[in-house]
Length: 188
Image 1 (cartoon, one colour):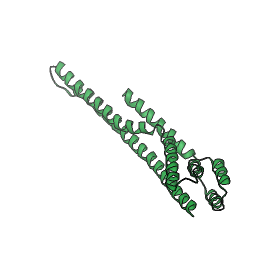
Image 2: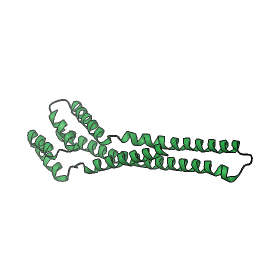
Image 3: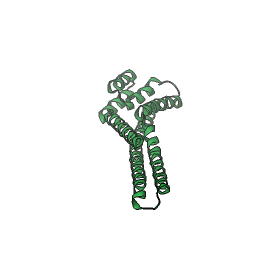
């Protein structure tokens, strides 16, 4: 049970760490997009870079990477923006990987407790002259508790992992949309 409680503590910590990190990140508003587009259309690239630096969020850093590569082929600009996006994703993911590992390991540790409980049952039976419910109940209790706790931690970690992954994927979709609109804007 100690490893299971340790895993549950780590899972809770990772979830709230990533949740509040994602929630705390700035997002671009419509006024930024309007000002940014206007500056690009009028050829004020330095002003657009300054605007991106002022907002200092993931989306603005990706757009700024595109601005810094203006003059290069479109493919190279897009590739540089994509690389910057990957760096931003790494920041968002942080230790999220371990939440997925916990979702896999916790049920297995619960099953180790199940095996331990069954061993305890058979050991108690081998020592006794007659079989009684009290000989079996201790092992069954251990078996059921560890399995239940392991599965519960695994399921909750699995849900938390996919919830956070989904939030990150939605952000990536927004970034990709902004990149496509930026490429369209500089193609004009």
